[in-house]
Length: 380
Image 1 (cartoon, rainbow, N blue to C red):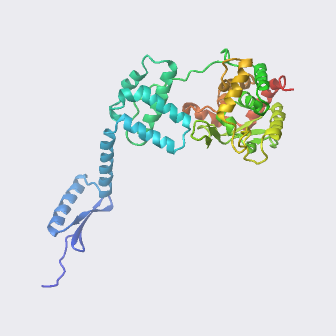
Image 2 (image 1 turned 90 degrees about the horizontal axis):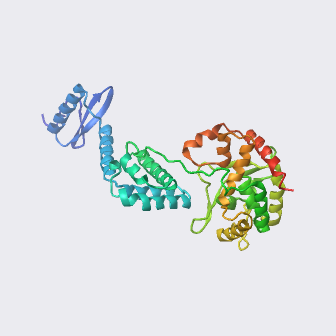
Image 3 (image 1 turned 30 degrees about the horizontal axis):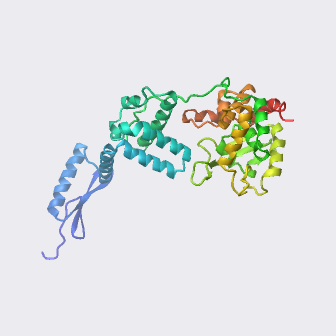
C-alpha cells in the first residue's frame, strides 16, 4: 500500500536517505556504519553479526584507533635518526632547556652521530650501532654520546615511535677527586676572593661554600638571600643567568637544581656587606650587577677577565666551576652521606634524582653548621 512505512530488520534504522546498522557486542551497542541502500545495510548487518558470533567484531572506535596506530607506526618506521634528532631538539628548545645543554647535544649529534647513522630509520638502529659510535672514543666523548642518545631515543620511545631504546649502556661522567691538583684548598679560596675586585669577591664564596654554578651565581637576586630566616639563613635557587643565550637572559635552573640551601653563619656578614655595598635595593636587583646596567648581572666577559686575573695570582689553571668541589669536599668532611652530597651539589643525573627525597632541611642545617666551623678559620 502506497505510503506504508517499510518494516526494517532489527539492527537497521533509517536516517534520512541512509540506513544505519548497529549490533550488540559484549553488552554494548555499537554502530557498524551507514549505507545508501537497504541491501548494503543488510549485508553489513549479516557480516557484523557473524563477527560477533566468532568474537572477531571490532567496534568502529577501536578500528579507527587501530588505523591511527598503524599509520603512526608506518610514519615512525620511515622517520630517520636525523629527522627525529631535529624534532627532538626543537621540542627541547620549546621546553626551554638551557642553551648550553642544547649546544652540547647538537655538537655531539653533528660530529659523532648523524654522519654515521643519521640516514637510518629509528627502528633500524640497534645496540651494535650505538656501541660502534663509542668505540675508540675518549671517556668524555663516550659519556657525551651515550647521554645524548639515551635522552633522544628515550624521547622516541615515550612518543610512541619506538618500542624500546637501542641504548643499553650508559657511560659514567669522569669526575675529578678532591686529591686532583686542580682542586683548591680553603686558604686558597680565601686568597682567590681577596684577589677578585671587591664587587665580585662574593662570587668566589658562593661557588666554594654554597656549591653554586656560574649561571646560578649570576642569576641570584637580592630576594634569593634570606639572611634573617627564622630557621636560619638560606639561599634560594630560583633561576640561572643563561650566559649562552642570545641575548643572555634569566631562565629556569637546570633540572633538579631549584631549591634552597642553608648558609653557614660565618658567610652571612660577607653576604650582608656585599648586598649593602653593591646590590640594588629592589628585591629583583642582581646580586652581582653590571656597572653599565644595574638591572642586569655583570657580563660573562667582565667576570671571566676578573676571574682569570685572580686565579693566575693564586692557582693558575683553576676553573671557576672547580670551586664547587671545594664546597662538596668540606660538606663531606662534616659527615654528609652520598645522598646528602648529591642534594647539596644538586646533580642533574636522572639516575640519582630519587635519592634526594629522604634529605631534610634540618639535616642540611646541621651539616652547614659543621662546614661553618672550618670557614671561621679563613673569614675573620
